[in-house]
Length: 123
Image (cartoon, rainbow, N blue to C red; front, side, top):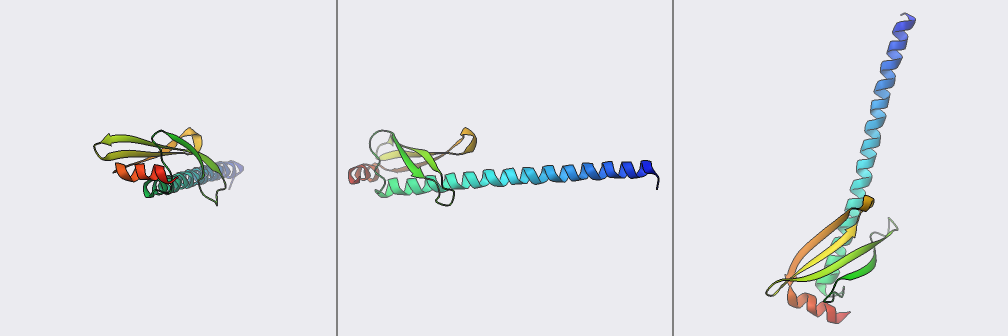
């Protein structure tokens, strides 16, 4: 094998190694993003359950509350909970949880109006 063949083989090997490292970094970024979205979905579902069960205390106007997304992530997030009349006897509950990069996960659910109004009395 000549010196030129060895250099070409090393260049090809280096290109393959760089490609593998880029794929690994991309997979790591996707895994982190999926973890963030999963935590946001969990927090939104938890808050929605609190509001619709009567334990969360939703009132007639928009609320801003501090809530913990997940204990294992140890971070706080500003979660917005809103209630809007939708049609006769139904209210639209929206729970908005921030995710990385300024994005938000919004969970919406239609519930009977009396459930939410009775929840606002419980506080």
